[in-house]
Image (cartoon, rainbow, N blue to C red; front, top):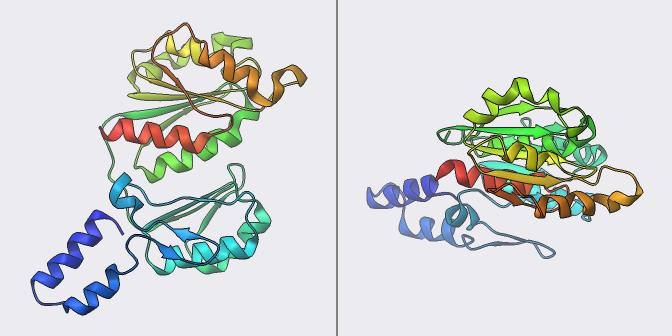
Length: 249
Protein backbone atom coordinates (compact mmCIF):
# COMPACT_ATOMS: atom_id res chain seq x y z
CA UNK A 1 0.00 0.00 0.00
CA UNK A 2 1.41 3.39 -0.98
CA UNK A 3 -0.06 6.89 -0.86
CA UNK A 4 -1.28 6.74 -4.48
CA UNK A 5 -3.14 3.47 -3.96
CA UNK A 6 -4.63 4.66 -0.67
CA UNK A 7 -5.81 7.90 -2.30
CA UNK A 8 -7.42 5.92 -5.14
CA UNK A 9 -9.20 3.67 -2.66
CA UNK A 10 -10.56 6.58 -0.59
CA UNK A 11 -11.62 8.45 -3.71
CA UNK A 12 -13.52 5.35 -4.90
CA UNK A 13 -15.38 5.26 -1.58
CA UNK A 14 -16.14 8.99 -1.79
CA UNK A 15 -17.58 8.61 -5.29
CA UNK A 16 -19.63 5.61 -4.26
CA UNK A 17 -17.78 3.24 -6.59
CA UNK A 18 -16.47 1.13 -3.73
CA UNK A 19 -18.68 -0.01 -0.82
CA UNK A 20 -17.38 0.92 2.61
CA UNK A 21 -17.34 -2.75 3.63
CA UNK A 22 -15.08 -3.69 0.73
CA UNK A 23 -12.77 -0.79 1.57
CA UNK A 24 -12.56 -2.00 5.16
CA UNK A 25 -11.62 -5.47 3.90
CA UNK A 26 -8.89 -3.98 1.73
CA UNK A 27 -7.54 -1.97 4.68
CA UNK A 28 -7.82 -4.79 7.19
CA UNK A 29 -4.23 -5.93 6.60
CA UNK A 30 -2.82 -2.43 6.17
CA UNK A 31 -0.57 -2.50 9.28
CA UNK A 32 0.96 -5.88 8.41
CA UNK A 33 0.22 -9.22 6.83
CA UNK A 34 0.49 -12.23 9.13
CA UNK A 35 2.23 -15.21 7.51
CA UNK A 36 3.09 -17.15 10.65
CA UNK A 37 6.86 -17.11 10.46
CA UNK A 38 6.88 -13.62 8.92
CA UNK A 39 4.92 -10.41 9.31
CA UNK A 40 4.91 -8.29 6.15
CA UNK A 41 4.96 -4.56 6.87
CA UNK A 42 2.31 -3.31 4.44
CA UNK A 43 2.39 0.15 6.03
CA UNK A 44 6.09 0.82 5.37
CA UNK A 45 5.67 2.50 2.00
CA UNK A 46 3.20 4.96 3.52
CA UNK A 47 5.64 5.77 6.33
CA UNK A 48 8.97 5.60 4.51
CA UNK A 49 8.25 6.04 0.81
CA UNK A 50 9.36 2.55 -0.20
CA UNK A 51 7.98 -0.92 0.60
CA UNK A 52 9.48 -3.61 2.77
CA UNK A 53 12.52 -5.34 1.25
CA UNK A 54 13.14 -9.07 1.62
CA UNK A 55 16.55 -10.00 3.04
CA UNK A 56 16.94 -13.56 1.79
CA UNK A 57 20.11 -14.62 3.59
CA UNK A 58 19.22 -17.05 6.37
CA UNK A 59 15.73 -17.71 5.03
CA UNK A 60 14.65 -20.98 3.45
CA UNK A 61 13.41 -21.16 -0.15
CA UNK A 62 9.93 -21.87 1.17
CA UNK A 63 9.95 -18.81 3.42
CA UNK A 64 11.14 -16.50 0.65
CA UNK A 65 8.60 -17.94 -1.76
CA UNK A 66 5.76 -17.40 0.71
CA UNK A 67 6.84 -13.81 1.43
CA UNK A 68 7.27 -12.88 -2.23
CA UNK A 69 3.98 -14.58 -3.15
CA UNK A 70 2.18 -12.45 -0.59
CA UNK A 71 3.84 -9.21 -1.71
CA UNK A 72 3.08 -9.90 -5.37
CA UNK A 73 -0.49 -10.99 -4.62
CA UNK A 74 -1.18 -7.93 -2.48
CA UNK A 75 0.24 -5.76 -5.29
CA UNK A 76 3.21 -4.30 -3.51
CA UNK A 77 4.13 -2.16 -6.49
CA UNK A 78 7.88 -2.60 -6.55
CA UNK A 79 9.44 -5.66 -4.93
CA UNK A 80 13.10 -6.04 -4.00
CA UNK A 81 14.83 -9.05 -2.45
CA UNK A 82 18.52 -8.90 -1.54
CA UNK A 83 21.19 -11.52 -0.84
CA UNK A 84 19.37 -14.03 -3.04
CA UNK A 85 21.47 -16.83 -4.50
CA UNK A 86 20.75 -18.13 -8.01
CA UNK A 87 19.15 -21.35 -6.77
CA UNK A 88 16.74 -19.33 -4.65
CA UNK A 89 15.71 -17.23 -7.65
CA UNK A 90 15.10 -20.46 -9.57
CA UNK A 91 12.68 -21.49 -6.80
CA UNK A 92 10.60 -18.28 -7.07
CA UNK A 93 10.99 -17.19 -10.71
CA UNK A 94 7.57 -18.56 -11.66
CA UNK A 95 5.76 -16.21 -9.27
CA UNK A 96 5.64 -13.38 -11.80
CA UNK A 97 6.83 -13.15 -15.43
CA UNK A 98 8.56 -9.81 -14.79
CA UNK A 99 10.72 -10.94 -11.88
CA UNK A 100 14.33 -10.05 -12.75
CA UNK A 101 17.52 -11.44 -11.23
CA UNK A 102 20.87 -9.67 -10.96
CA UNK A 103 23.41 -12.47 -10.70
CA UNK A 104 26.31 -10.31 -9.51
CA UNK A 105 24.29 -8.22 -7.08
CA UNK A 106 22.19 -11.21 -5.91
CA UNK A 107 18.97 -9.19 -6.10
CA UNK A 108 15.47 -10.08 -7.25
CA UNK A 109 13.45 -7.15 -8.60
CA UNK A 110 9.88 -6.65 -9.71
CA UNK A 111 9.05 -3.15 -10.95
CA UNK A 112 5.37 -2.55 -11.64
CA UNK A 113 5.11 1.18 -10.98
CA UNK A 114 7.70 3.62 -12.36
CA UNK A 115 9.24 5.46 -9.40
CA UNK A 116 9.29 9.24 -9.16
CA UNK A 117 12.60 10.49 -10.56
CA UNK A 118 14.18 13.09 -8.26
CA UNK A 119 16.38 16.00 -9.31
CA UNK A 120 20.09 15.36 -9.58
CA UNK A 121 22.16 12.25 -10.13
CA UNK A 122 23.71 9.59 -7.95
CA UNK A 123 27.28 8.51 -8.67
CA UNK A 124 28.22 4.98 -7.60
CA UNK A 125 32.00 4.63 -7.49
CA UNK A 126 33.98 1.44 -6.86
CA UNK A 127 37.62 1.06 -5.93
CA UNK A 128 38.03 -2.32 -7.64
CA UNK A 129 36.26 -4.92 -9.71
CA UNK A 130 35.87 -7.12 -6.62
CA UNK A 131 33.62 -4.44 -5.13
CA UNK A 132 31.07 -4.75 -7.95
CA UNK A 133 28.66 -7.14 -6.17
CA UNK A 134 28.02 -4.49 -3.51
CA UNK A 135 27.76 -1.82 -6.21
CA UNK A 136 25.17 -3.89 -8.07
CA UNK A 137 23.05 -4.22 -4.93
CA UNK A 138 23.26 -0.45 -4.48
CA UNK A 139 22.42 0.15 -8.14
CA UNK A 140 19.29 -2.03 -8.15
CA UNK A 141 18.06 -0.43 -4.94
CA UNK A 142 18.73 3.10 -6.19
CA UNK A 143 16.87 2.43 -9.43
CA UNK A 144 13.74 1.52 -7.45
CA UNK A 145 14.05 4.94 -5.81
CA UNK A 146 13.98 6.45 -9.29
CA UNK A 147 17.58 7.65 -9.10
CA UNK A 148 19.50 8.51 -12.23
CA UNK A 149 22.76 6.66 -11.69
CA UNK A 150 26.23 7.32 -13.07
CA UNK A 151 28.65 4.43 -12.52
CA UNK A 152 32.41 4.72 -12.21
CA UNK A 153 34.33 1.50 -11.63
CA UNK A 154 37.86 0.43 -10.72
CA UNK A 155 39.34 3.80 -9.72
CA UNK A 156 40.94 2.84 -6.40
CA UNK A 157 43.90 4.55 -4.77
CA UNK A 158 46.41 2.02 -6.13
CA UNK A 159 46.04 4.00 -9.36
CA UNK A 160 44.22 7.15 -8.32
CA UNK A 161 45.06 8.84 -11.64
CA UNK A 162 42.22 6.71 -13.07
CA UNK A 163 39.80 8.85 -11.07
CA UNK A 164 40.83 12.19 -12.59
CA UNK A 165 38.99 11.86 -15.95
CA UNK A 166 35.75 11.27 -14.04
CA UNK A 167 35.91 14.45 -11.95
CA UNK A 168 33.22 16.26 -14.01
CA UNK A 169 30.73 13.45 -13.34
CA UNK A 170 31.67 13.28 -9.65
CA UNK A 171 31.27 17.02 -9.18
CA UNK A 172 27.89 17.12 -10.91
CA UNK A 173 26.43 14.36 -8.74
CA UNK A 174 24.08 15.42 -5.97
CA UNK A 175 25.13 12.47 -3.80
CA UNK A 176 27.84 9.81 -4.18
CA UNK A 177 28.20 6.24 -2.98
CA UNK A 178 31.86 5.22 -2.76
CA UNK A 179 32.52 1.51 -2.33
CA UNK A 180 35.95 0.16 -1.36
CA UNK A 181 37.60 -2.75 0.37
CA UNK A 182 41.28 -3.21 1.31
CA UNK A 183 42.16 -0.04 3.29
CA UNK A 184 39.04 1.85 2.12
CA UNK A 185 40.82 5.13 1.38
CA UNK A 186 38.90 5.98 -1.79
CA UNK A 187 35.97 7.52 0.10
CA UNK A 188 38.24 10.14 1.68
CA UNK A 189 39.89 10.92 -1.65
CA UNK A 190 36.55 11.43 -3.41
CA UNK A 191 35.08 13.44 -0.53
CA UNK A 192 38.05 15.81 -0.75
CA UNK A 193 37.21 16.59 -4.39
CA UNK A 194 33.45 17.19 -4.32
CA UNK A 195 30.92 19.39 -2.50
CA UNK A 196 28.16 16.77 -2.25
CA UNK A 197 27.59 14.20 0.51
CA UNK A 198 29.53 10.95 0.20
CA UNK A 199 28.10 7.68 1.49
CA UNK A 200 31.01 5.31 2.10
CA UNK A 201 30.53 1.54 1.90
CA UNK A 202 33.35 -0.67 3.20
CA UNK A 203 33.50 -4.09 1.61
CA UNK A 204 34.85 -7.37 2.90
CA UNK A 205 37.37 -7.50 0.03
CA UNK A 206 40.97 -7.82 1.14
CA UNK A 207 43.69 -9.97 2.63
CA UNK A 208 43.87 -11.21 6.22
CA UNK A 209 44.56 -7.94 8.02
CA UNK A 210 41.55 -6.32 6.36
CA UNK A 211 39.55 -8.38 8.88
CA UNK A 212 36.63 -8.92 6.54
CA UNK A 213 36.12 -5.21 5.89
CA UNK A 214 36.80 -3.90 9.39
CA UNK A 215 39.98 -2.12 8.28
CA UNK A 216 38.09 -0.30 5.51
CA UNK A 217 35.26 0.53 7.90
CA UNK A 218 37.62 2.13 10.42
CA UNK A 219 39.41 4.09 7.68
CA UNK A 220 36.11 5.48 6.44
CA UNK A 221 34.94 6.34 9.94
CA UNK A 222 38.22 8.24 10.47
CA UNK A 223 38.04 10.18 7.21
CA UNK A 224 39.65 13.60 7.47
CA UNK A 225 37.39 14.86 4.66
CA UNK A 226 34.09 16.30 5.82
CA UNK A 227 30.71 15.17 4.57
CA UNK A 228 31.34 11.42 4.69
CA UNK A 229 28.71 9.11 6.15
CA UNK A 230 29.50 5.40 6.57
CA UNK A 231 27.19 2.38 6.37
CA UNK A 232 27.90 -1.18 7.39
CA UNK A 233 30.27 -3.57 5.63
CA UNK A 234 28.94 -4.74 2.23
CA UNK A 235 25.69 -2.81 2.78
CA UNK A 236 25.01 -1.52 -0.72
CA UNK A 237 21.29 -1.63 0.02
CA UNK A 238 21.56 0.67 3.02
CA UNK A 239 23.75 3.12 1.14
CA UNK A 240 21.26 3.34 -1.73
CA UNK A 241 18.34 3.87 0.67
CA UNK A 242 20.13 6.82 2.24
CA UNK A 243 21.12 8.20 -1.18
CA UNK A 244 17.53 7.90 -2.38
CA UNK A 245 16.25 9.84 0.60
CA UNK A 246 18.80 12.59 0.03
CA UNK A 247 17.81 12.83 -3.63
CA UNK A 248 14.12 13.14 -2.74
CA UNK A 249 14.64 15.96 -0.23
